[in-house]
Length: 263
View 1 (cartoon, rainbow, N blue to C red):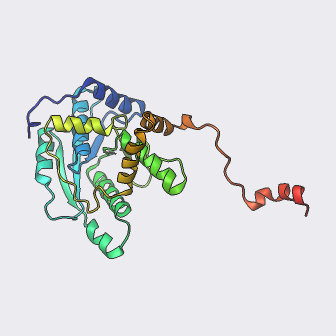
View 2 (view 1 turned 45 degrees about the vertical axis):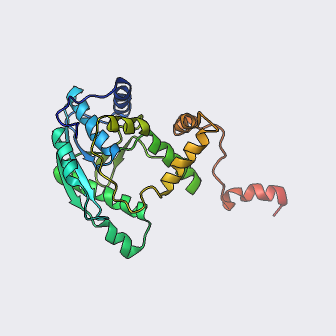
View 3 (view 1 turned 180 degrees about the vertical axis):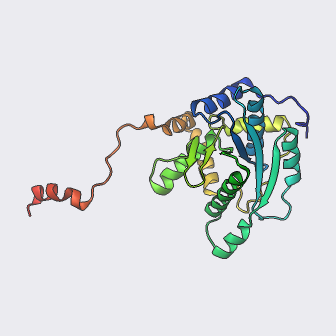
């Protein structure tokens, strides 16, 4: 893997947006101990690389450590290459097995929801056990837009994840430093620098609702070239314009109802 022993750096256009996200949402504070969720996919490897760079350049002093969750979907998850990558970045790395595959098989519950729930819970427990006060995930701008659209389609709500979230139960702050970076930029960078990507063990990789939304956006961009830019603008609270009020209950409408139709 050619990333070994190279000088950690990023293109100026990417570094400036990475820095903007961290500064705008005040993601990193002096003395933070940040746990990175690293699966070995392109996004999480890039996140570890980017945070290692920020650690070198920021005046604020903070520490990094990383955790890989093995969901036991396969018996051949390549954790060794992930560990080697983290070592080169001078980031401590650990692996924790969480038998999510068996839980899904026994309960017959939705794969994505169950996997996400157990992964997050394991990350938070481990963060608490090592005294980490923040957990960093590799969600990028495409993820935010896709989540926004998925929420609208599946629940009728305008909702997406936030760049920084405090979890009251675990007392952990979740940060997403890549929220201003596009997926294709990450893909191009890790390809150019020959990062050793670990194949996803997910049994439905490429067949999820998220992949459907991703494909839909791609198809619609052929008709509406500015679609992604408009969707990413739409995830801001300032994008709200003329929307209907929340539905009123029968009790709330009773007096007005009688004024129209009598008692």
